[in-house]
Figure 1 (cartoon, helix red, strand yellow):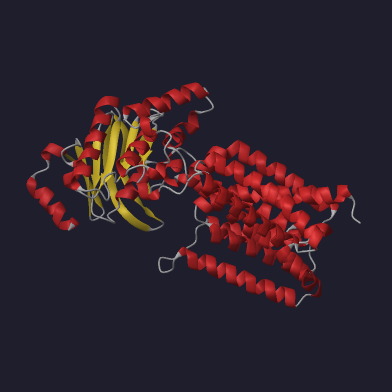
Figure 2 (tube, each protein chain N blue to C red):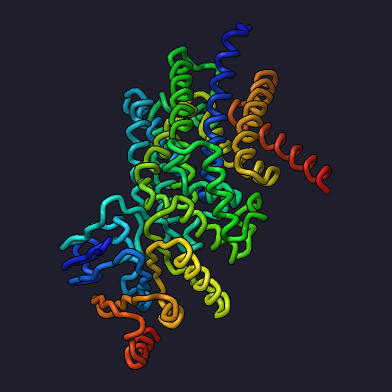
Amino acid sequence: MGIIELSSVYIGYKKNIILENVNFTISNNDFIAIVGPNGSGKTTLLRAILKKLKPIKGEVSYLEKLTFGYVPQISTVEEFFPFTTYEVVLMGLFNKLNFLGKEEAKQKVLGVLDYFNIADVKDKIFRELSDGNKRKALLARALVSEPKVLVLDEPTANLDISSEKATMDLIKKVYDDKKVTVIVVSHQIKTVINHAKKVLIIKDKKVKLYNSKELNEQQIQNFFQVNA
Amino acid sequence: MLSLSFLLERLIIGIFSSVMLSYLGVYIVFRRIVFVCIALAQIITCGYVFGLFVNINPYFTSFIFSLIGILLFTLNIHSDKLPKESITALSYITSLCLSMIFIAKSAQAESYLLNVFSGDILTVEQNEVILSIVVFVLFFIVQGLFHKQFVFTSFDPETAEVHGYNKFFWDLIFYSLLSLAFITTIKTTGIIFSFGFVAIPAAFATLVFGRIKRIFIYSCICSSFSTIGGFVISYILDLPTGPTIVLTSFCLWTIILCVNKVFTR
């Protein structure tokens, strides 16, 4: 049973079609990587999945009461605001604060900070955290509301190889522990191929879904040539 | 000799304006939109002097001009070939030049020239006192009810949208509140006062206090004190109200910063 289904979807801005005839289904507990070169339309596809962009044609349908946790690229966060790590994570519960008691919200935030081993920096200003801890804090914020789908936009951007692996390992751990559906965007197929179950490759306005294990060396090589 | 109650009423307007502007100034400084807001203030000033020029209620014309400014900045109009700052600069310089022309060509506006920039809180009428109080109450009701929305859409607009907070809508409300604060200060304390209070308290408070809550609180408290101090100085020495209050705020914050540096060594 799919939780998100795109059927004959055309996505773009005004009359400029970025992706055409997109058809795929995301199932419960999937781990999907969306890969493609810079400017291929990964973020556009993500915006359509997150209901931030209405398709020009076709339909995106969702399972009822589907909730998203979103991890943006750090560069899109206005880091000048001197929020503490605790305050940043609490933002993930803003929608629920009217229903949750103050104490319950606090316990949820502390619990998720603990899960990511960043409880010791809860009172530290977000801007002053290491890059690794910033990513953990944003992940914690995305997970604190216990969403059904976790969406991450380029979580490994601007990282060295070892940090890339550490980040992907952490996402895999979240996937295994929390039983959430994970959608991760990356422009590097080699970063995600070993972790994701399925890979959505975007090329020449077309989107194709592969099972990670089915992807052969030739297909990956083709992707690299386009990406180079 | 002016009565104490008369002076107190005017002082309260100054305090209300400074508190509103310094509260919004925290968002403005951290969102790095100080120049956008200065351009918006200039557009509103242009609307005010246009009202004097065509002999229409200047509050009405400044309100109409503020709508143009709000749309210009919330719609985030920009060109791929042109940095956003250029559009801010264009709107600022155009509205400044228009203001000068309206002032030069209108006898009524010319007599208000100094007031528009530096304010004359002593010539404020009773209905303007009431307007300031209404705007102040409305301002803090909206801030109190929707603080979370302003915080989230300012800090991380992308994620806020995923959580259902529409950035365009909340930006529209934010700039509308700011415009209201600007409109109420044009005649009373002048546009220089607005420029000063959106930047000085938040910038200094950030250097002195590390936490966001403290920055909000102390920006507002110190703005109240510097308004009182500046108001008294301007009255005693017969100086223009707006610039005197702004300079008092600058001096007060400089002292606080120095004291803080000495004691936190």
